[in-house]
Length: 102
Image: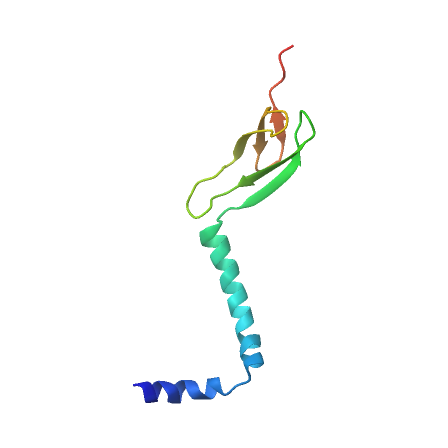
């Protein structure tokens, strides 16, 4: 079995490693992109923008990570600076807050 396996693989081994890397690079690239987009981070979208209240930069991640569900269509987060509740819509990327009581 070992001798037969070497006879089959031997012509490929004799190729230049640079040629093997050039032939394998597109397969590895496409495989890693599809694995990442379909299984590890499906439906991902990272958005950031200013907080409507205090203009501090706020980041929101929409999507799942390895099966753990994240925000779907609307993300409800709190600003790290002013602690205001912010709702961010995924489709329109509109951030809104509740009006302050005066």
